[in-house]
Structure formats: C-alpha cells, structure tokens
Length: 274
Image (cartoon, rainbow, N blue to C red; front, top):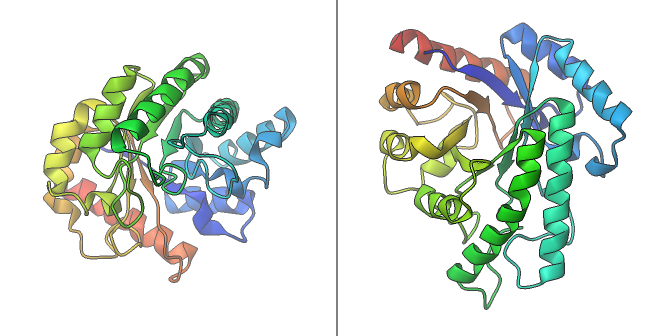
C-alpha cells in the first residue's frame, strides 16, 4: 500500500512558507510537518487570523498540514520529568496550547521528541520520570481528544536523552496513561540505536504506532545513508498506513537536493514492494 509522503519544514530555513509549500507539492509531497519555532518566536501568541493564513498558504498549494514536531525546541522553563510541579504545569499548558494550534492549522499529530526537556535530572529515578510524564500526559489527553489531535511519543537514543530511549519504554508509558490520544512515533535514525531490528520494531509495536519519520542515522534523508529500507519496507507497508515524514538534521546538501532525493527513494521503495 502507498504511504502518504510529507516533509518537515525546518529544512527550508530562509524560504517563505508559500515557496516551501509550492515547491514541495511540485516535487510530489502531499503534506508538510511544522516545527512551531519556524512559525513565530512565540508560537502560541499567533492569532486565529495568523493561524488561518498559515493553513491557507499550505493547503492552497495542494499540501495538507500533517501536524507539529520539535514541540519544546527553543523554549525556556519547560520540562516533562522535573520534580518541580510548577514547571510541569507550565509544560502541560504549553502542550495544550500546541494541541489547539495544531488543530487550528488543520493538523492531527504532535510528535513529542524534545530530548533536553524530558531527560531525567540528577536525583530523578526512571520510575519518578515515568510517573510524572504519565501524570502530565493523562491531563493532556482530554484536550487532545477535544481537538482531534494525537500525541506520538518518540523514543530517542542514548546520545540524545536518558529517558524513553526505546520503543518498549515508550509503550510502557503509553499503557500507563491509557488513552488512545497518546501513541507511538518511530524514527529510523532513533531506531538504529535499538537492539531489535527495524522490521521487528515495526511489527512488535505496530498496535501503538501513529506516525513515522523517514531519515538515516547519518542525519540525512532516506536513501542518503547506509540504511536499506528494503529490509523493512514490507513490514512498514503491512503494519502502518499513516504519513511518512522526511526529517533531516544535516542540511548541508541543500533543501532541494535532500527533498527530491528522499522522495525519489521512498517512491522507489513503493514501486519495488508493489
């Protein structure tokens, strides 16, 4: 089955949103995933009119707004697992605001990575961190449900964070929350740090999987590194029918080269599996 292909907009720094949207659609993408900090210095202060204009700019090009990621990037005073209850309350309120903004823009997914803002502080045990995160996400879930938004927890490797490093730990937290609004997000770069292979991770955790980032451990796009997607493409096609969003961290080849090569590679995978 064909997946719908999207790309994350922070790659296009220096481009207008209109240019980004038009070019991505021209190349063949169907969706755009947004980092809040690319939209405004204080994203939650965007007015209803400004949000509507952002949505119109993207959809008028023929793209859909997939949702938001890099949720807590470039924020101050926010943290998921800290012992400070006031900080966790501010974090909850910020995420509630992002859920509103995501829905206003026409998106339905929030990808929660934010390694710095979730890592366990000195003196915080893993059990403490899980309990605090579960409490916060349980409080967030009703707002997500009201706005029709789902939050995908993203496991990240040990070089990035000391909390939720594996899909297993993320699913344990999801089960502790017990809401269909809190699900699992997988990312190829992060999956490379797990003991299980890509296909096994996809198959084992498919019941919780809501979103997927396509990239490579070398921080470039799919097909631009050593990971051969053919090894797990059938598992992905069989177990997951959502968006594949291209997310990269090394912009050196340039936005157009990355966007086009990534898209072409994913289309090749689809053709070979078909």
